[in-house]
Amino acid sequence: MFDRKTAMDETPPLTGSAKNELISRLKAASEPSVAASASKPTPNAQDENRALFMSAMSDPVRRQIAFNVVERNCRDQFAEGADGVQLYVRLLTYVRLTNAAEAVDEFERRFRPLLDQEALEEWRTITAPLKRD
Image (cartoon, rainbow, N blue to C red; front, side):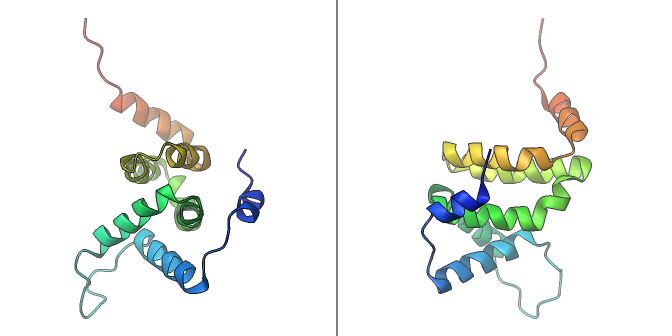
């Protein structure tokens, strides 16, 4: 079982400014955007945030921070039936695209239990390949 305290004790801390920037950018990436709220929208901000999230997967310290942000911002959403499963699958896809097996295992172990299990089973049934005779 994942022990957050032990993991935090074993990983060296990032410098204050690097940690703060990573946390703020990951937080911004996980929050829903508000259309027309900014006078000048940032071009491709979602792409930049996705790239930042994905680049954190190979570094255990940065991955821990990224997953903490995901847990803080998405924990309740993960439990919201099909929508939660869809969000989980989208984030898991980003993690898988990094080819970091340890990150994939950690993501699944940490976040799968937060899902609505009935919705997850329904999603598996719907997305299962058809068996041909």
